Image 1 (cartoon, rainbow, N blue to C red):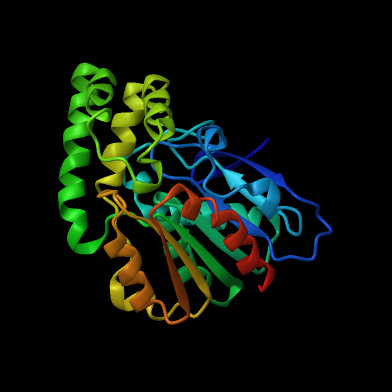
Image 2: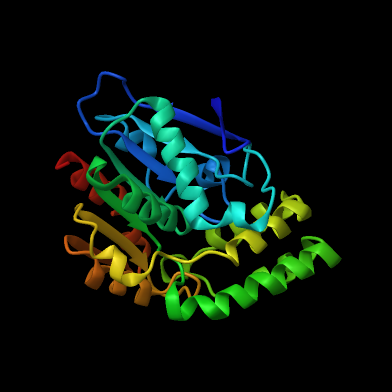
Length: 268
């Protein structure tokens, strides 16, 4: 693992894959409240397989994992997190890249793509979060969660985890709930409250601006999850001019995501 100082904070990252590999480097960002360590428990995309033909950098977003805390809610805005991502890419000396991520990582990649322009050779957008019209309700939820954690600790979230909707691919096993509970129990309440408030400032880029992203895009969504609605994925498919949307409703569907990602990256 390594660290780089960006925007007054420390970002922790690691690279897998051979420096001499001929594939375009792949940058992956995790979701809200997650981290590299958390993703390793149940990766949506297996970075070790992806890294067989390219370098892959994964990092803990500001406020998460081994990286620095948020100094203010605005530090957790997705546009601000995109600046961290670009700073990391430039620190590594990479030119062209493929950007990807899950949920918050998807949002970060979209904001970064608008800033990087032609340097982005492709996008892999997994479980896009609420956005635009559907973001309003989610922002209110984040505010309530921040208040609850500040006043009652993470136990308030643990109580709600068991009744929260479970994505369809995990409907017949306990792995999703187990991971969620593990994440909550291991969390620092102050950190959780801060990143919830940061997420409350965030949204995807304005829809019309996304039409300027010409990079080939693979959108990977799943059904049954109001926090990552299929409607966002479908809207991205309409807005991004060179995109393909895949929706997983079963665990078998979900298990194809790594191979789909590898096939997509091999064409970049």
